[in-house]
Structures are given as structure tokens and as C-alpha cells.
Image (cartoon, rainbow, N blue to C red; front, side):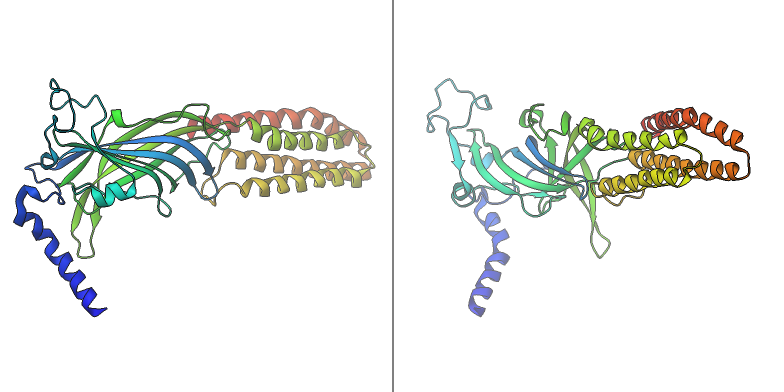
Length: 364
């Protein structure tokens, strides 16, 4: 065991010097140029299988594509069966020299290729297809399909009328930006069709960009790294949530207002009806909270339920006031309060609900 460890350590130590000793015949190191090596990068989103608001994660299927040039891998096109009129630099067709499969790409291919890190991924991405092709001028294209889970912050202020910008971050392992740069390539990117994906969400577009981030070591040294950012824009379909949660809640609130038509002496029945409505609102609120994370800000649905709770509590207070007036022999005043409450409560509830929606759509 000690011998194996010593031999492995020696190989790791001498490995970087092998490329210098053998010149261009060694194809395992990054191509050395006066400028950073530019890697064209694209990401294709095949499908989103799950959006978990509680954990702020997404499960998706995608494909990753990389394209770069390595003159050490150039070869004679006639040897590979290209026609005599083929021109170097023509990448309109699939290259004739192709490595397919995990073993072929990782073991048979002798050249250098970048290794991509999935920065905000949870666990390893599961690769299903891997291919690498080389054109005669030394241009290399690498592609893989995979399934993965990513952690991405979500803005739920307008829930359930929210739109989300889901970001996925990719970096190159080992190399700094002065050695290697990721450059978005539109020809290597795409997104899923609008009618594919989970039914609750609609695809609103897909954009990608690059940026420079700095990694700081414990010694205080900063290392600039090139990062590729894929942004997925999706919009929630709120109708299911509205019909399954909000509509029954509104019906319960409206039924609770029947207390204003009850007999003045039935104070216990009036209060029981109002309390049943309050307990129902609390139960609905717990159901909603189970679907969203513990966030520090107020959402649209939070504000709506809080207002609903206060209106139900106000109906209890009105019932107590009317009962006290009746006991004091002022039943006419109590009747007026009941009469006005029949239209004040619904009108005010509707108006405040509309103002809540307008506020969250304008100021959040």
C-alpha cells in the first residue's frame, strides 16, 4: 500500500512536466496561447420535471455543449474521408472523427478537454450520453445530456401570480480566467417547447450570459474565475391554486357574513359561525405555508389571508357589540349596525383585496 501511494504521488508530481518534455506530441494539457483559451459554451434545457418552492430547488433534464480549438488535434481531412474540395474551418457537418460513450471520451481520447463544475447543483449530475468530435482544423466539440437538481433562490412575493428567474451556474474546474474563458454560444443553446414540462408552469424564455467571479483563498489571494449563467424564465399558472384554495376560502368568508341576518338574540350562533370561519382560515394558511419556504418577507397570499382573518375577527366584535346594545335596550342601533354591516363588510373586503393585488404587482 505504501509503495502504491508513493508511486501515485510521483506520477502526480511528474505529470505536468511530461507535456513540456514532449512538445506538441503530448495532448493532455491545456492549449498554450498568448491569450486565454476561449471555450464556446451552450446549455439546452430539455425539460423541467419539478419545481419545489419549499426547498427552492428544481429538477431538470438538459444538455451541455462545449467548443474550443486545439491545433495539436488537427489532422489531414483526406485521411478521414472528407471530399477533396473540403475547406478547413467548415463546421457545417458533423465531424468525421467522433468519440462516443463514457469510456471512449474519458479513456480512448488522448487530448485535453475542460471539466465543468455545476456550482449550485445538489449532488452529482447524472450523465446519460457523452460525445466528442474533432474537425480537421483541430476544433473540438463536446456534448453531454444529463439530469440534475439545482438550488436556486425564488422570489415568492407575488405568489401565486409569480414569475421565477431560475439560474444555473457552471464553472471550469482548476483554471482561472487568465487561462480559460467561457463564452456563450447561441448555436449551442436552446430550451424546451412551451407545451412540455410540468403543467403548473409556462416557459417564458431562456437566456444565458457570462460573468467573472472571485474566489478568495484563506491567505487572502483572489482568483478570478469565468462563470457561465443559464437563466430560465417561467410563469406560474395560478388557476388551480385559485379554484382549489382561494375560491373555497372566499366562499367560507361570505357564508360567515350571514350572521348579520340572524336574529339579534342568537349571539352564540353568530359567534360560533364566525369562529368556524376563523378556524378554517387558519387551516388553509397552514396548508399554504407547507408549500413555501420560511421566507422573511410577506407574500401576496399572506396579506390576503391576514386581511381575511381580521374581517372574520371584526364580525365577532360586531356581534358582541350588537348583543350588548340589545341588552341595554338599544336594539334599533344594533339593527342599524347589522344592516350596514351587510354591505360594508363585502364592499370593504373586495376593495382591500384589490388594493393588495395592485400593491404587490406595482411595488414588488
